[in-house]
Amino acid sequence: MYQLNFDLNDFLTRFWHKEPVVIKNGFIDFEDPISPDEVAGLAMEEEIDSRFVSNLDGNWEVQHGPFESFESFPDTHSQLIVQAANHWHPGPRALSEPFRGLPNWLFDDVMVCLSMPEGGVGPHIDQYDVFICQGMGKRRWRVGDKGEYKDANHHTGLRQIEGFDPIIDEILEPGDILYIPPGFPHEGNTIEVSLSYSVGYRSPKKQELLNGFADFVLTNELGDKHFYDPNIQTRDEHGMIPTAEYNALNDMLMKLINDEDAKARWMGEQLSQSRHELDIMPADPPWQSDELQQFMEDGLYLEKVSGLKALYHENNPSLLFINGETIELPEGCEAAAKVFCDMEYFSGEDLGAIANNPALLALLLDFCNQGLWYPQA
Image (tube, rainbow, N blue to C red; front, side, top):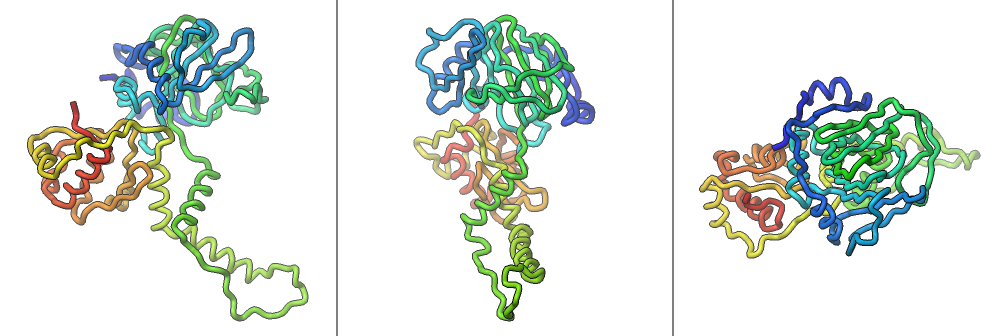
C-alpha cells in the first residue's frame, strides 16, 4: 500500500492550481509498482494507448503502439509511454490510491514512462494537473512560470515549445514527487534508466462543456420546437432583428441551457466517461442471482474495474452515472450510491439492509455480468 509523506489537504491549500512544487521523499518507502518488462508488455497490447518518443541528434520522432518488438529502438534519447496503465495493471492502480481524496470526476489516469538516458518529450505545456512520481533511476526536471511561449515541432503532437527560464530545476530520485498545475512549461531529461508515473487530473474546457451539452440535446431530441410568433407584423427595416424577437430567441436558448434535470443528467454522463479503454470482461459464465446473493451473504468483496468512473450528484443520489450511462437506483436504495461510487470494493455488509433488496440485487447482478464489478481475488 502506497502512503504519502505529506498532508494532502495542506498541499491543496498551498499549491493546487497555484504553483508547481517538488516534494522530496513524497512517498514513504517507495517501491516501483511495475517493472520495465511489464511496461514494454503493456505497450504491445492492441487496446492500450502507447507511444515511443525519440530525439536522437535533435530529430524528434513519435511512434504509436501497439509495438511488436523494441530491438530496433535506440537505448538513449528515447522514452516509452503507456497511458492509463492503471486500467491494466494493479501496480499503477495502487499508486493512485493515496490521491483518492481528490475528486474522481477530475481523475484521468496513471501514465507510465520508461525512459532511457537523455530521453524525454522536450519542453512542453500541459493543460491538466499532474503528480509526477519518480521510480527507479533519476530524472532532471525543469519547470518554468506561466507565460506566452512559442510553439515548436508541430508535427510531433507533443505540444512542445521553444524553451523557458526555469523556476524549478531539480533531480528527482525514487519516491520524489513533482506537482505541476495546468499551464506551467516543463521538461524532463533522464539521467539514468528511469521509471516515472504521472497521476493526472484533467478538467473540461468551456468549449467541451458546450459542445457536449449540444450533442446531448440533439441526441435526446430536446427543444425540438421552432420559433413561433402569431403576432408578427410588417416592417420597413426588413434587415433588422428587433429586440423583442432577439429576446424571444434568446429565451428559447436559455430554457434549454437552464433545464436543470437535463443538464444534471448530461453532466453526470459526460464526467463519468473514461478517455481510455477499460479492461472490462463480461462474466463467463454469467452470474446467477442465487450465486451473487450467497456471495454477498458470505461477506466476500466485489471490486470495481480499474478506471471505471461511477458518480452521483450530491442533491440526487438516486441516479448513478457509470461510464457515460445513467442508472436509476431502486426506490429506497439511495444509500447504494455512496457504496458503488465512493468505494473501490465493497461487501454485503457495506450495503447493509438494502443488500437484500431484490431490485438492487438484480441491478448489481447486471453490473457484475457486464464486468463492471468482479469478485475480489
